[in-house]
Length: 145
Image (cartoon, rainbow, N blue to C red; front, side, top):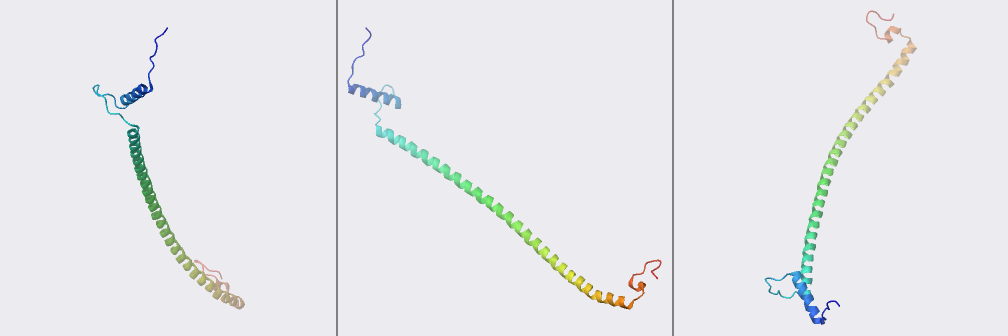
């Protein structure tokens, strides 16, 4: 038959597992045995490393958020500056258009008044039947006779 495996008791198995864990976690230093690592120490190490990783990730994320916010503020400031320039140009153009319309209204009144004043003169001239030469401007070299 084959080689038989010796039976071991539970305490021997437990000690073997603990030794294997110590060797795996820290190894042996020059054959001297390292102090036993308890489950609580392992949990503390994992907790400390996790807390540090979370703190670093939170700080990085917070910095990224602040930088994004600052970029948004700078973009908004540039948009506001451009909007103010456009508004100023629109106001200036509006004033110019208003001035031109006022000038046009003055000229339109003058033309209207001139036409109103000229019409009676033209009608009365037809009634008196002036010679055509007085109604038309003379032409160089000879007029209408």
